[in-house]
Length: 326
Image 1 (cartoon, rainbow, N blue to C red):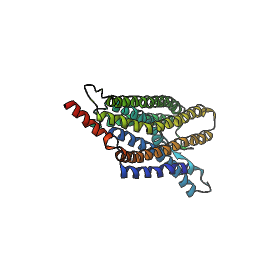
Image 2 (cartoon, rainbow, N blue to C red):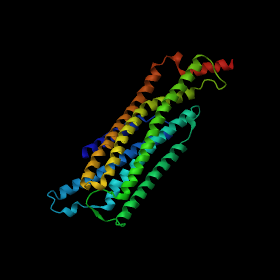
Image 3 (cartoon, helix red, strand yellow):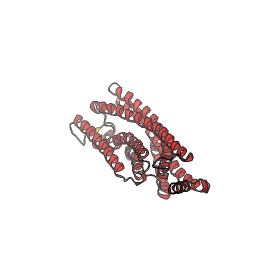
Image 4 (cartoon, rainbow, N blue to C red):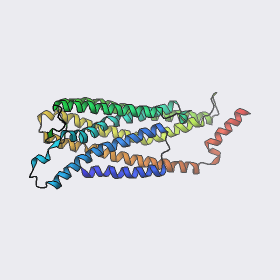
């Protein structure tokens, strides 16, 4: 597990350096959502690191296992490492991906004036998502503490916060997140088709010089191009996220369904094995984000240098203005 935890951290460092060096030419709302997606991903990595660091510390302090009581885990530490980091992540990630799709729909509907839109929507949805995630964790922690008679310092045999009621709550939450994942993938697919269709209509209208009252809109065409560029990179990421987490959530539901009838050590070992899927996705997502940043930078440079002057959209725009004025 320590190896799977280390890889996302290394990729996160490279991603941060790429972002700091090249920046990301996205609207502030979408940029804010993606930043919180990355931070939420690192959230679960931090939780796994806390659990692994405790195991390493216990192994070094008592390599022969002469004191079994030292292996017991306090309830508060289990809630912090397994609960806070893990469950906030499990709620925030699907919702943030869904919010990214909503923001791209807004960019499509407001294509002519989207560049002048402020960041209120991005700030609003991030606050809502993080509030929902924290409230879910607070409710989950209350159930666990109630099952353990509100004993914060209760010593557990395993670093886990699984009780019958918390297990049932997690199953229902998993079903809801699967529904959000399905909506996200469907929204991405429909958005890709809609942006491609609308951009073709704008270009065809210009080519045929069949202008309506609003005329050719450089901002509108630019926004459709930006939407398509972002979606073509984010859609595979969302599909990978949907498939990976659908498998993860499905396995979690099956495993939690058998939790009352299997030994807890077997349950925990299988649960840790399943969580490797999340770490694999996080590593894949960071690779996708780095590729998007680099492609976005190089693509803009190539776009500016490879387009003949007579075909530049800016020149087309001013040609149409001259036609209208004359």
